[in-house]
Amino acid sequence: MEYSNEEVISISLKLTPAFSEQVQNLKMNESLIHNKEQNKQNDFYSKLGDIINDYNEVLLFGPTNAKSELFNRLKDDLQFKKIKFEIRVTDKLTENQQRAFVKDFFRERETSN
Image (cartoon, rainbow, N blue to C red; front, side, top):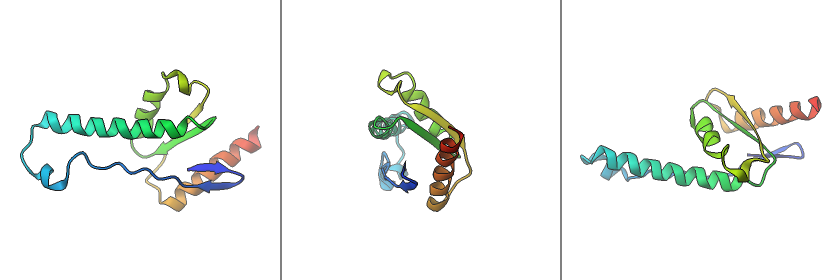
């Protein structure tokens, strides 16, 4: 989501499953499944990194560890050194709740500066 001029704009990326449901139901080598899933996740994080690189401040939030995994992947990359990251743990939020969370977070930052 992008916060600009008091508005929150959604940008969507979809993570496609590493295998179709049919293939997942077959007995497969667990290592192969794990490697395929890791590759898909790495591709997804790379796409997020390409988007994040256009911003000065980034808020990573949500109920899972994905936000921390993404941050840990990006923090040592020199192209992201100029970006200020904030990480917040939240419950699972609807899209409207996410918009409100982002808006409140950045409004609060604006008033405190």
